[in-house]
Length: 124
Image (cartoon, rainbow, N blue to C red; front, side, top):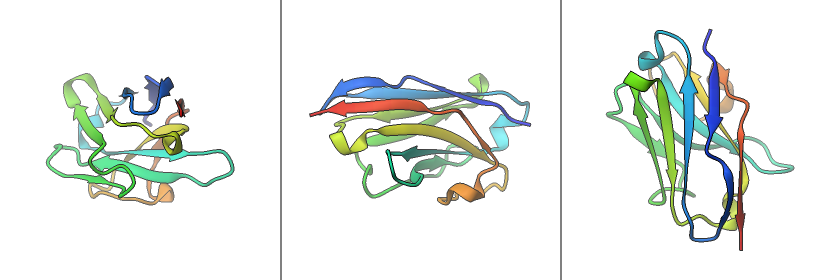
């Protein structure tokens, strides 16, 4: 069982930055692939970014490539999403998720555990 708790969301103007955090419980956190997804009103979950357990591989959606950075600190059982140059279309609830398979996945159903989400609102 893994519990994930996101934090760091809020209201920011376009062009601004936010850093999301996801704190995980569980002794095997360091072996999980971690991903970030987002869900805007009326839309389905959208893949944002993922990172392997060692941090040696990262994968981003085209829509955030070059603006967002995913990282992790296994000693703190925490994964981060640094979001720069935010746009109004980045407005969504952001979720972190964990996957024990070992390889990066981009589909929501491939992840085992999810956090409750944190709201990010970007004003124009």
